[in-house]
Image (spheres, rainbow, N blue to C red):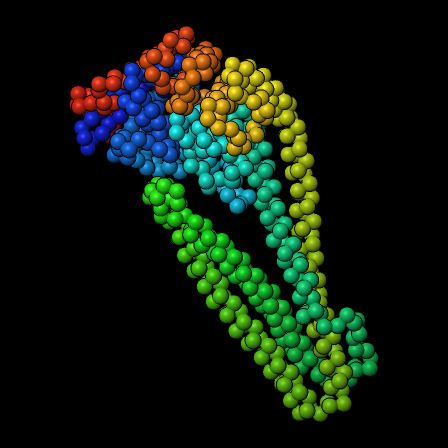
Length: 548
């Protein structure tokens, strides 16, 4: 993707402006600071889908409309963003963030999915997750873990960010690999559920199998006369007993499963409430109100707690219903025993009652035990099948990983070379960083800023060489709060080496006096110190360009 033109419209204040960019290096500059260079760069990536953590207070971006003209794969297009909604050149309807993220991923031919937090489930990544690799923010990117702090992506597992995005765009993990990882996660979840059911059945064994002597049936010859007389009665009673035993067994299993479910729901609700309490309305450090995104996350937690409570209430109602059904079945079985005794006395078969009792009991127990072992065996078969499937999918993943490790070794080698070459130009950067290992940088002051700069420029070089996705590289700040002239000179030497010498599109901000360090060709975009970024003169010209 190459950005060609960017339009900003503030209809409330009747202000606007437009900016044109070259397909290579672009420097947004001014003679003084705090004139809007950073706001312009932030707004470009905001329009693309980045959830920028901090704009300057005077930049009322939520009331502004942005339109970005671009070319991608020799096709021209545009994107409009106004607050939470998007409009794109090939769709008539407005898009929310989720719909836009799908459209953006399709535009870039990226179908990457990531694990959501505390889950094995994969979901389509939002646009901000992709953009976060190509955008260095002057505020959020120079603290915390590199790349991880640029955008708010807290709904993804932190161990996946930004490593999984890098692996995908650098072709170190394919869609096939991701699909197999997702299938593996589902199989493991199913395996866990079946194993839990299997263990529950083993625990309940003594309640349903009252005797192991299932072959002690009555001798047919010995009781031939009695059986011939009362066969119809025995068959009826036996059929009812078998039915009740089976129903009692099913209800007991269902009851135990519901009780287990309600315990798990209560634990989840407790954890969710703790998360909700931790998301206070005001920041504990600066006492500021939550951002809209954080408030939205807190509302989601509150709503999730409500749903969990309703689910617990619903499950408790189900438990009460199952307990009623179970008691009803037990009472019916007791009634059947009483009915049998009455019939026995009426038909004067007291002498043979023991034989009939033994027969009924043995047949009933045999039926119950057969059903128990049938269910248990079915679970064993399913668990065994999943184990076989997991072996196959693990073997497939191993093969894919082996193939991709060849590419990883090449990129890993280049990373080390690039990093050392860049670090050699700055005095305070350690050379002990490992490819795709993202950790908090342990340093401070100028040494910390130099380290960030080398890390970001190294990954930019890697992306320029190997990325399957082409997006403009934006550096909102070259190096933060640096005063040493020698360090400044060396830092801009690296900018020449990486950003200005590349054929890729790059955008970065600088003061006018820094051009003494820039030797490469670039498109200069001046933000004049005596003018605001937006003006009334441009409004009449541009107001018709953005219609939502």
